[in-house]
Length: 176
Image (cartoon, rainbow, N blue to C red; front, side, top):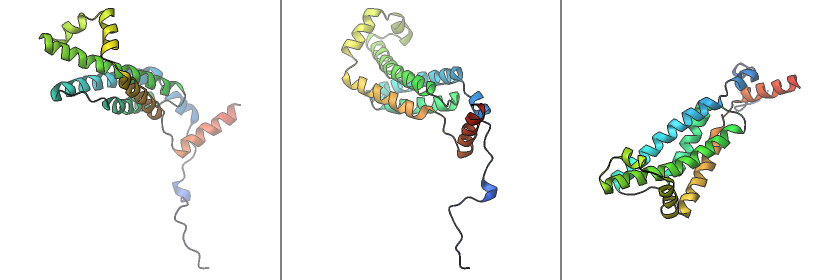
């Protein structure tokens, strides 16, 4: 008789039917995810190097921010639901952490010897890279790269709504 209206139960009209699970799986694309994520990673490395040159400081925490953005890029471009997308995002984030440091080193070397970045890049050799990793990259850079990988892996998978999860679960039950 004096029953209160329930605030937390959804209206019947608000409920959506289960999504098509096969369509959700078909939307995944490793190629699009990797291509889009690499493009975003290269832009972030370049932005990090330019910001470091403009301020004459290296911001190692930027690698963690890069990891988050790389993970979101993998989520957006790849639309992945399985384990491949976090693994790829983590690998790309780790490589971009070192590539960003390398880009900063290239621009700093170019400024020091008064050369452009392309000529410094063309002069890189195996010995130069070995010296770079021995003398420039320290333990803290490895820690930041590891953290960037973890953050990228966390954000890499597509976030599903309830009706999409229900659609995937019902699809799995019918095909088995």
